[in-house]
Image 1: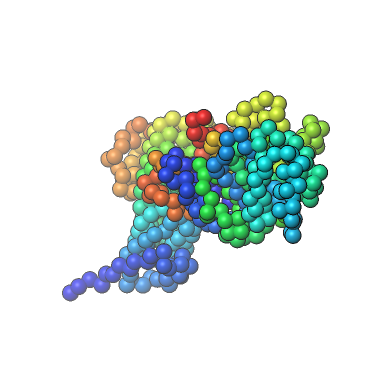
Image 2 (image 1 turned 45 degrees about the vertical axis):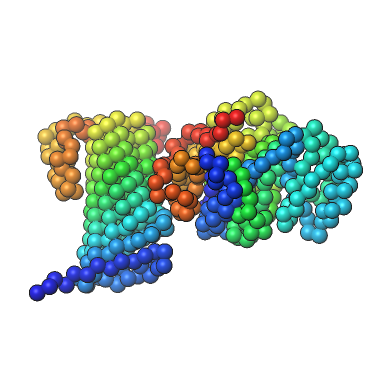
Length: 299
Length: 235
């Protein structure tokens, strides 16, 4: 099972409502994935700033951490807390030193994502509860993807929930299961990619990160995955400028898309799209198997 | 004398699919509600599954998975698109779709007819066992996989691997076929096939829309019916 939703806005007038629509779509996919949920939202960034999204343990002292990080970096640091996650905004030039300082100051934090626009939230629990905890419906942005998980390959943990970050402003969600993930994980570890779970999707994310580091474009990396990943899957990848979709060669896992003048939307089931504005006039279609699709805004 | 004819309207924004289907199952052979109108389906699954009555059910909007599955006798009209497994294991009756259909139209269906005004996605007619499927648009890949009997007629094109491991179903395609699956071959279209196709189109009320002479026929080469070691690579 598992459910995927994605919404890419063409009409800037809808941007303040991105989170509201994504939250409804996510909740509609509860029956496909009631054990955990997550989402990546591409919102406003600030010039020359990078957002680092972190997952905190319970009772984490965010205020002291913020002060310590600012003094360690000698730069101003903005910190926004959303339930168990914090988004730390640092000067673009200070990202690497910030990461090192975070590891030093608070090794108990887990890195969720890094990006100029992307913030990535996920947790165990019913999708509606997860969305509410992070106030998804209050978020604005240009596009976002979300996932509801019914675990099949590994434990129900926050780290095993989707999306998985694959690089700066990039993430991956997956519906399906990969059958060669153990073998591929060993191969990727030799290539220097590190993993924190036994999850099959983390391997797919690691694979894409590796291909991108080797110089592939995201489209090429997805094409290459058709040869190297065995199993059944529908992938949706989020990027700074849009999102991409890939289904396995026999299209085992469902996918339906809707396009209007205002947006492009993805859902594992049509139900997830049924409450979008103007859906009754949208062009509804299914992505073809083994074909890489991208919806991008011009850079 | 007035005819005892009443229409019932069920709005799925206020009623559950479970309640609707129970009411349809309770009809049996009663004839006091021969026409049903279903509003606001909004892509929910399993609408009008398991109906066994001479009724007309008209659904205004898009439906989810398995709509009209196991249908017997009923005519189900969908004024919208349909999700996966439309008319799965249908026994008889008619399903008419105004829009497009998702994967696995008429999977394992034994009888009756399914007419799709738009396109159908992959695995159309998978393991069909006697149903007559007519798609006025095109169909996706892996259609008629292991199709046993019945007819699949496509006004448009067919995707990859049409009729893989097919038994005795008859496939009529007017447009192009991207590729044929294992053991599926093109066969000569003779007068008797054109006559059969015309009869199927006529039964579905779409004869005259199209010239049966424009179709090509595909079916089983019958080489994979029984295991032969020389064919191991084709399975």
